Length: 201
Image 1 (cartoon, rainbow, N blue to C red):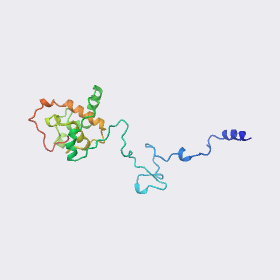
Image 2 (cartoon, rainbow, N blue to C red):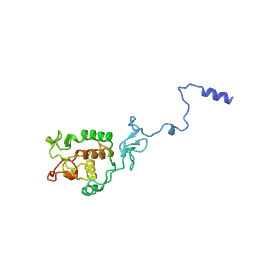
Image 3 (cartoon, rainbow, N blue to C red):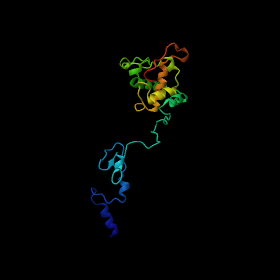
Image 4 (cartoon, rainbow, N blue to C red):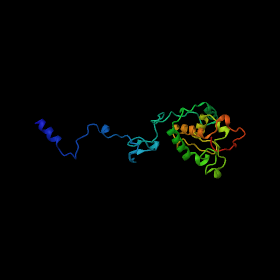
């Protein structure tokens, strides 16, 4: 009799599922990143969390690194950090042909508008903004990769930060590309100097 009852129960209407033994495990309260957020369940206001409201701010957990991303750049955005950045080595030793082409594409999208296609500080916006850094001058040819990365990360003079537009890996790759636009350090014209208020690195 018991077996027959179980068979009939198992063959009942499929549109009406049975009782869930552990609903908290079957239906997670966790917030899926791209899911629509129910404002009756989720809040971004830390003062309103608790009770039936789930607090979710969308930020990654502290200390975590996105898959495929390089470790965080920890030097501070101040004069001491800028000076110490000269000791930071580019973690990417070299780029292949395809990687260099991609770095050039990223440079043209993000940098050439001001610094120019060849790095000469004569991009389309240079006349309107003024004091654009000419990346082919000796001061930038001899500049350490780490210092250039620091400037791209935090911004320098008229140039804002590009940390939100470019990943750390992309920033390092663009520096490799910039080096291809520059004359060799030994052959640089030392008579050329950069203006104090130049835009950028």
